Image 1 (cartoon, rainbow, N blue to C red):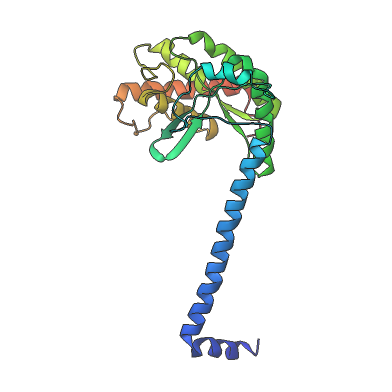
Image 2 (spheres, one colour; image 1 turned 180 degrees about the vertical axis):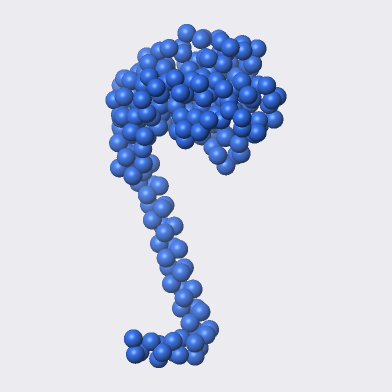
Length: 249
């Protein structure tokens, strides 16, 4: 302790030198943090993908669809054992920075769905977090997809002790109560504003256990439509989790 006054005097004697020394230490730690994050991001991608999986996408963007005939052509390629089709879409909750995504898959590939559900759940837990499965919904022209999709998500949630967000059931419930409120765009698959709002309310109700009913944020939807979607999200989530539990959360 007796040397502290001497150290302090030496530091303030040449303020420019001290300032640059402190800045160099700050920059060093900043660079270390950035490089560590980049290293984890790159290694996580390899860990998730593995060396036995090849991803093919449209040259413009992942949101552009590939011809369905490509699947049959890929299946005839030497060394290929399974071909999995994904249709990507993105959604937002309240503002663009609150982004979430989902990728529905072909029903005949359920075993692959469960295989990678476990793989990704294990990866998430290794990094100190808990997995959450977002249950996708039936196509607007194929409502019979609802129950099979729900059953597979429930099975995956139970197998991995993970929370399932019952967005697909909320979509079905909303359409039963108010069929005039469309939840998808013209392709009958991707959500419109109302569908995205319902999905976000269901996430809020399931993950955060927060009742969206009465929220003043309507995303520009008519007040009665927003209130309807809020109620459906809360009631569906409450009933689903009372029946199926909340996984590890």
